[in-house]
Length: 290
Image (cartoon, rainbow, N blue to C red):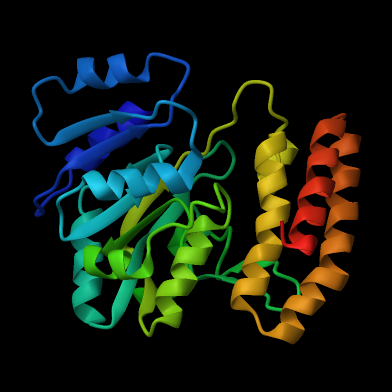
């Protein structure tokens, strides 16, 4: 999957680029596969973490190693259309105040082909539940008259000017994984910039289910215990950091306990008591500010 993703990045038309692959201490032969398939291509730089450090650390490391004027963060389960980077840069031209622009992410998982995954990501301020405009509708039904849609962040794939990324402080490594993208997007907006989804820029989001993971739990983002812990904790950290005092109190005192009960029930129903316990621990840590 990562090799196909890299190939799609290298195929971008009308832009000068470098591709930095940050291997987060994967237990397989990812490095050998990258080197074998792209041997001799000087546009690629391969970096391997000494230990599994997760998304925030890995993305910051890739940014530090890069030279470009714009940083395009891309998860490995993506296949970019050849003009995606060019169309994103065109969107920056249309919106001079933009601090973040993302491509339209399109589902390509079985039975979800060509449906919108994300288009205008945001949160309900009183519950912290995510919401996405036009989620799961066929891309053919998108309004043709509007090519850019406002957003507050984008998971999975997004571009940021280096100067704005540096001023923002980059990804908060204390969040480790989950909500680190949301937090960065909101920091950029709170600093006075706008953020957009450029629908003319497309990426096919393949999705990935690791061996041993339950599909239902993967859909909810709680397929692994540590990821689940971060999800529950960071949801509350994010609310306290970016919502009003009254809104964050609503999330902490009302929604978080209800959410913990729901996710715990789903995890136990799927015979994953370890994930249920991880969500409870994460919720307690978030409430206590740990």
